[in-house]
Length: 378
Image: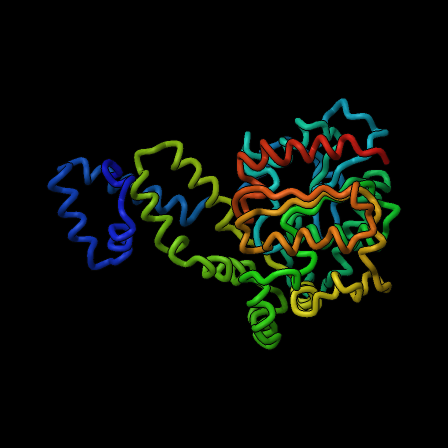
């Protein structure tokens, strides 16, 4: 079924996205390939089912639980021979509707593995728990306190690596408790949402809070991960609702492609729920009012300023990121109190998700970041 279709024109692909055309395509395939069409069709159905209803993702790198908190498990990926005197690294994984395993996506395609190889021997990651009904009133303060507790659990000081939403939470911790942070990496993190427009920023600004409150109400006080997934998919509906099945059709006899498709579906199609209070605080205070960048955000009873951050900072953004546009990350260089010579600003090719699991970004950028962290004195 896949032979001869890799080089389809956009016109042909659009035809395949049109159900009434399918009998025509089936007839054409039958004349070209005869009985093999049936075997390939059965194979295609199995693979389409696999990427539509995949099993849950798992962490691929061996680890133990260093802390079991109300909102997260702190996973320990440290080398057995790591010096207990070494300052630990905590990867603050996004809590934005998907499982935390994006930081350890696949063997050989893992941010955790890249940092370990680069010299980060004491290494931890947040594994955020899906919000239950009992967690619905947890706010940003609760998550900030849990991250602070995680730092305490590994010795009281740490290098923080904040990915996307984990970036603004890490920046809050570094500003609120600067003595706990030795260096700060912010990757794809929306620190200053008014630095440039992006699809998520525009949606957050234009959509009334009543809409977000209604979603939380529908979720019984939680922002359901399935609602967020629908929102992400609707940013590129053709890709997610039709394109991936057309590409699967093209590559149904390509084992490497099939494994990549299954792997991505295991992570992307599974969701976690967020506490309604935390979600509404993030939308209202960070994305609508930009209070973190303006120095107006109150964290654990104290108004914080990013100028309190004076440790070395590494900023990484995707050139084609339409979730967190690069200016929203790079603007942090002018907001923190770190001397300019101790700030690294770097742009990686690709989009948002690729920042955390793209093979070339892991090889070319995260390996460099890992060496940079390992070289920081604290």
